[in-house]
Length: 286
Image (cartoon, rainbow, N blue to C red; front, side, top):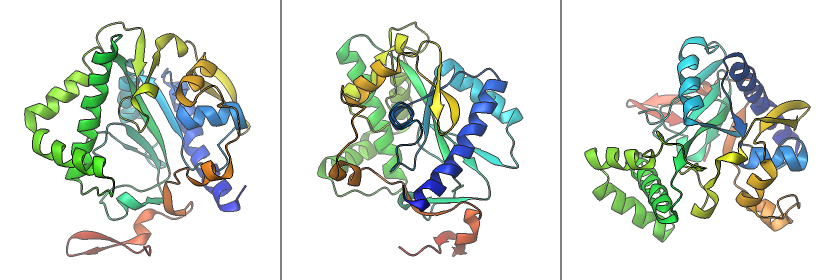
């Protein structure tokens, strides 16, 4: 493994282990998701070329996590970057570490905390009917497009440009709230499916049977025991296909997204910024 990537992963693991201890102390149930769950099962730790760590919770536990974090988070070491705010307009929460730097291209000059982080996602109850479930997914994609567009997101892909244009024209005021309500419309009902609609996964990979979650199953992750869904094998097969345990070829590895363009595990991100005419200017070369 590349020494620099190992250093990055070790620092992310510090955040993850704090999150784990915090959740256990306060009775919050969570699970490793996506690539983090895959890394746990296939590599007993991080995917070697991955600089990301994701967890998800059902809505009840997500709400509890936000509530107890408000009161009990170690704010000397960590910062809770809440979803759907001026600072962080997307629809999941980040737990960031103070006095570190993890800069991604699209936030380089945004006024926000830029420390190392773990993503904390909320699962929403999903409709059994595929058409209704797709409407939840579509509503979430429009919300994400509107949010990204309003914050200056740019893309070269035609279909993404179209989504940004349409969402800018349509998703305003009550329409925004109506779409959010639609994504969450089943959260007061007991559904057999749950889904994470605000991530990058394609529609067919966003939802899965609630029973896959079950009771958290502790598995090895970089020398520690962390929770994955009880039926993690079924979850990963649905998310990545039946061959999820196979190591991908070099071409596939090379296409894997690397999030950070600059990191410093021991220095606060503010040391790499300056203010010009009331705006943040990055001191990191493009």
